[in-house]
Length: 462
Image (cartoon, rainbow, N blue to C red; front, side, top):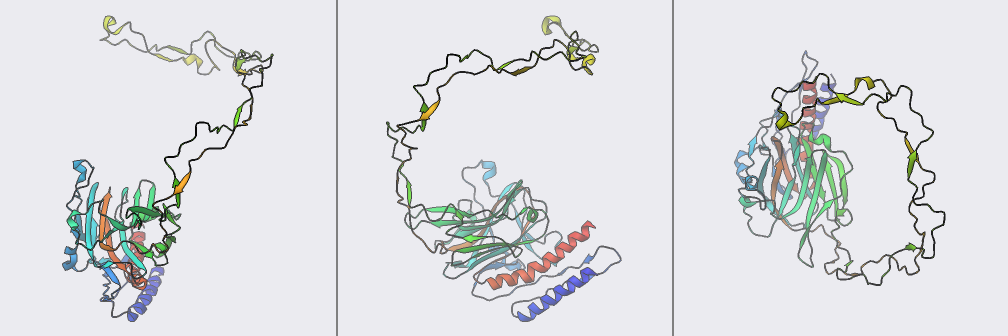
């Protein structure tokens, strides 16, 4: 009964949204809960909500429902530099297919198909992102059909220099502007937001990543549900990172990236050297001190405890180890070659319940007369000049920037990944400057799917 009520509420919400956006929706989302005599609910598949928007604010979108558009995605045929020949190829397979346990009818997605392979596939945007408008919203879904062991599911937004990029030659070295999305290996779970920023003074690029979120991320890699990853980057330099519409991390490009986008004003002068007469010893031995006449350095640190006595039951005439009486000399043993045969030694069974066997010696205790080697006490160094540090000089690479939001233009969306599992599902890519469009995609495609996936997983476990 509770499932029916829940689904009716979702239907009412979706109907109200659909009426407000008839021009944007091609097919209505239908969520039904068909009661059965079983205690587990039956999950009926529904039609895929097809979003149709002619907004000029969309740089890229792909739900993978239009098979004629699949050709826009180009698999790399390149090789990685500096890697063994066997591993260098981007030979990981991709396919457009319906995921396992799909909630929607004929809901195609882009699926990473190979284990332990390098994968790279990319598509040019409808138009470049030049950061002249704000915000930039990047959103897509990831679903691990099996528990991920090690591998990424992040996207790279490749930099555009105004020339046509050969998508067949995309590698890990292809310049990107933004890298965003989930990644994990073993017990380490990450949610990346990394930018490559061009120093306007030197022209050199450097990578800067958002500080790690404190939110636990492990369940997103193991629950076998579709998860919605959203990045919102705004002209005020703020960024927000969501998973399933929940804020996971946020910050500012000027204050919350590591290392800082703006270089230090001053740097250490690498040519500076500590003067030979610089004394940085804060304390020195007192040269006026003398060893006391009664200082005895010959006393040992520990001595035998003369008050100790042998414990009752100690078997002094028994050896802790004895030859194994059951051992048999091997038939092929040759004394001339192998030496005189001796039975292996075992713990003496007579000592099992005794406090000890063999010769008893008193335990050692600290020697009250021990003083150790004499050393002169330390006193303040009258020549101490402090800890030496090299001088600092103006940083020739320093620049001032108040609006780092205006990054290098973007022309291509790429997946350049390594994964130790196959069957990683990517779906519903969207890059836009209108956050309301991203919310609409999430509300009308991902949210109903997430509800039904959760019910299906619960039903399967009952």
